[in-house]
Image (tube, rainbow, N blue to C red):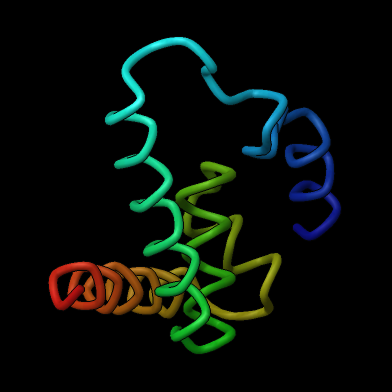
Length: 98
């Protein structure tokens, strides 16, 4: 199962969000809001537990399914769902409080 996960993960194209992919044209206000949201998300991720952060990033950033996340993190798909749910709820709380 882990071997299959490695094969599937190898086929995915994940592009990091950095300066090279940012839109330099457009409304400066929109860019400022996007940078603020990105900073809030980064700060929020640091407040999550390690497992919640890993599950959230594997699901939201890399688009993995819960069974793939479970195989990668040596847990169950049910536990991966719970960790993702708690991570999303906590991130919403952090953003709302800011």
